[in-house]
Image 1 (cartoon, rainbow, N blue to C red):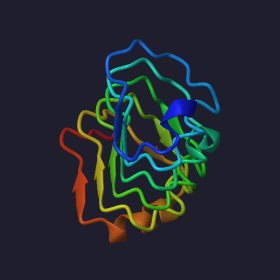
Image 2: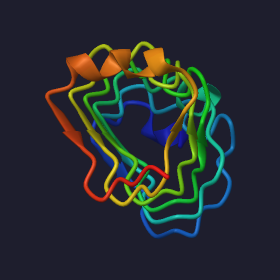
Image 3: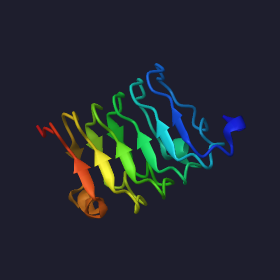
Length: 140
């Protein structure tokens, strides 16, 4: 995406059968505002994937195969306001998965069937949210 270095808009990569993200796939998208990786087959995420996306406002990771959010996964997304994690088989969300998301206002968990919270202090980040969508959230 080197040629999109000054691009400030939306990058929509929905329904592209993406299974693997190269660690530096988005390193040149410094001004990107919206990224949709929804409806792919992504399983693993790390903070390195989003390292240069500190201007990102909205991130859609819905309808993938993400089952774990590690500590600091989104740590570089300082301006993120909306995060979609809908319909992922999330089982584990580590206590600091959402660290540094001080601007986050909405998080969407629709269709998430199971969440195991590692640390009871985990919910500290929730107080900054204007909207938390957890329709059909089951804890077993």
